[in-house]
Amino acid sequence: MRLRLAAALLAIAVAPASLGCPRSEGKPAPPDAAAVSEEAGVAKAAPTHPIARPTDAVAELGILTDRPRAELEAVVVPAALVALLDARHCGAAQTCDAVRAFVTAPDRVEVSITTATEWGLPPESTLPLVAKGLTPKERAGLAKLPSVVVVHVKGGQPPEPEAHLVARTAFALTAAIAEKLRGFVYDETVRRIETADAFGRHAITTALGEPAFRDDRILIQSYVQEDGTTRLISLGMRRFGAPDLEVRGAQPGAGRSLGAIVNAVAARLAAGADEAPLTLALDDPKARGKTASVDLVVPPLQQGDPDNTIVRIVPTGGANAAGYDQLVTAFFGAAEQLVERADDADLTAATARARRGFPAMAARWKQSPEPRPKLLVKLPFPMPGDAGVEWMWVEVKSVQNTTITGTLANSPAYATDLHAGAVVKGNAKELYDAMLVLPDGGTEGGETSKLLEGRQ
Image 1 (cartoon, rainbow, N blue to C red):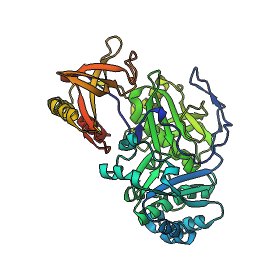
Image 2: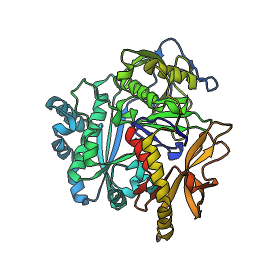
Image 3: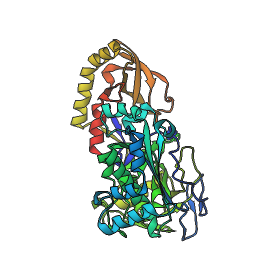
């Protein structure tokens, strides 16, 4: 069995570009730095130049709740908000006092109440990803929550101290309100729904002047482009008064290492770095003592990009697969590759179980009443030449003996003669995995995906 595997960073969410633009956390400043040549992917920049930034820091979060309107109105009064804040939300006394003062400062914090209909929830089909930390029962209950408490915070730009007070205050207030209401936090900017307890673990409690950035407060989204290369883009840097970051044109196997580099650049920008190129060092045992230079330039925007200034990370070798591989090699000694794995005992065993269990899973799927679960199988599709196979998920439409007919659920990266939604056929004896997606958003099966996710 040959499996093409791409490494994935824990902080990366693999998602299609078509998810669209998240709710605005404010309009960005027009780009005023160097531009990128789309043809060459190489920066046209002065040796040193300003890094394009948004005009200010903005953060917006929502708390989904079923509590009565009168209770919500009592909670959102400024004095009540200040009283909710505790050390677990904003840190030691001096830091919490600064956050409390920011809550009552003019034109900085707005906490309002709206309906879930007006606010808008992500499509039900995306909840297993957007709300993956919730139980199936909790995900099913989100649609029954009628109200949203919206926390909107805005302020200055680094190195102004109040820039980080935007993120500190937004996370502190949201954590405190969600805890009080036992609601669910919808961070639409990074497309994540969490319980109050889970969101509380993102709270910024470091002392004033110490770093407020941490990679679990943003998201790095990764997807394969039409030309087969990978694009990474960050979501959520506006809350730190910083631009979001893009890597474009990398080879698909470099996701983990490039994600670490994106996070390192993000930390520098959140801390107030304002001139490029930057000399980077990574807080990673494998990269300790090594440095590399990257430029940051303004690229053309794409549909679905965050409503923020965006800068592209450009290695000295250029914004292309070779340049990014050189950058990864500078830190880690070698670039990651898509590799053939034929010796992974755990994955082999999981596949064997999936094949043995597929007939019973298919029979259950056929016999299920409406609304019927979706049956997905991962099948092999040959790549051009003798390059191996690309494994992709197929939504099953029928099963006759061992012949599976369905529609392709992935956009191929390599099997370029196919496209998402194409009608395809395969043999159940060759499937790599199988999974039921239940009407409540839960899943059964998909053991190989769970194994790989656990290794990230």
